[in-house]
Length: 219
Image (cartoon, rainbow, N blue to C red; front, side):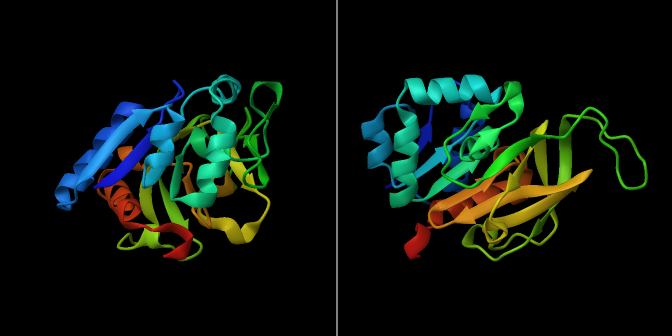
């Protein structure tokens, strides 16, 4: 049995994520048990952990800390495969500019920055914020979660803040929307995406399937 814990702190797209994981498990013939939970014991017992998130980072961080999940996420990232999605990825960073500035978990080095109210492309085209819809992800380094996914595949994004990773060698995928930003990060047991794999159709489901088979840093 492949036990997956989806961390519930009241801010994640929990139903979509859990259903997508159950779907790819069935499709691959794998026995998968998905728990949507904030119970530290269940999260520690899981084989793999998903850390999702949507909404304002201040509210997210407040709930993460209230539930004692800040130290737990740091612990889990050292012990087993962790997939962080959207605001879950942003929460891993040092700091976010959102809500007049919020200290995040500091598990990964870097900052979360606002696209801006006057975002334009190099050709002068005005861009809407939030960045919402499909965009290409350039795979900047190999990783087991990219297996079977063509480079520059299109994934689904919804965000007004982008991630500026301090250590370039940890960036596993990049996307351009007015600025170049980290669409994916990979370090040891952590794989994090700004895009939503659960909303990204076939390529997103493939990434989730790869996660179900990934053993982490020792693989």
